[in-house]
Image (cartoon, rainbow, N blue to C red):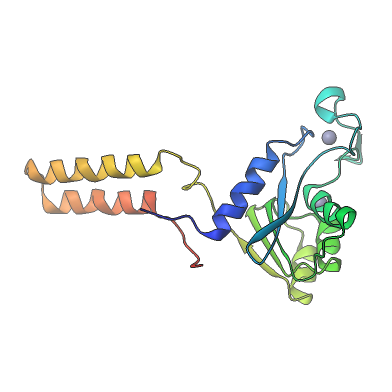
Length: 191
Ligand SMILES: [Zn+2]
Ligand SMILES: [Zn+2]
């Protein structure tokens, strides 16, 4: 049985949060974690009680939707609201943070940024993270989001066994085996 890594687990939380996003331009989710515990979460959306982009369309100025608060900021502000320290915490974001969020995360004392998708990765944001000693790492979750993954893996394995028993060439079965391993490979980061 393949166990998902902590990184994949927390990123999956952010991917779920992104589904709560109210801005049609980009669905982003963010989860702040300290000592392997979730301390806050946020998604790309309007202020509480405000008009939603999904209802009224985006409020676009200079090609940016100005109505929404970015997921990372919402997560940090949730900590501010409830007095939870962000110093030394880590954040899992579905998309590489924008420049504004980058600066806020550094200033909030976030020490690691894990992101799933590259998104207009700003060179200055990369530089600032680097200067501040913030660890930045991409986390992929595609494999683990396949909830039937293990069943599929078992099916492919059974098919390969059947093939070799039916007299297929060793080379052919080995080649298919390698493809299956690449397809089902789970990246783990230890505990
Ligand atoms: Zn919007
Ligand atoms: Zn942002």
